[in-house]
Length: 117
Length: 119
Image (tube, rainbow over all chains, first blue to last red; front, side):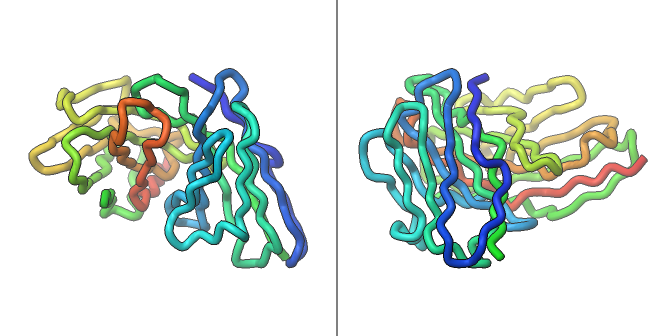
């Protein structure tokens, strides 16, 4: 299957700082990527849909000014958590979709664990 | 709106026992995809199966089997002869087919079932 990487895998930061998470499709071009958030012992919740060359679409309740998404190329989407606070501590997972595959399969990255002190 | 319910939050079994994970979904669409993923302690999601709404055949892959019943909107997953390595959280997910292109079709996840297999 297609491979998606995330960087960093783990980050610890101080409250008030901004953190950037990268999501890369390594062997395919992803016109669409999804960003999910998973709090401890909970399910994955979709945060936003990232579209190459256009603005991201955010799910209800997700602050677009706090979670900045940039999808500048067909292989890279970034999520920036601005002015992070302890409640933003979570596991962030991205996924990419192989265009025109017709099977709705998303390929997930390994996730980024964010801890805000 | 689509919804996926996994009523069992945690299941504990002894090795070699069979375990069945329930998944019930809600959708207004007639065309959709259903998935099962495994999430081991490392956190990375492992794809297990995809089933489209027109294919109601049950499937078996090694010790894994799936029972799709459209009439009851259920897509249950059975692990036969469980092993300690099966210990993980398992998620059922639903994707409505908004367009024929794969891009843009969001996944809705169930709450997950934590499976603990004891030696």
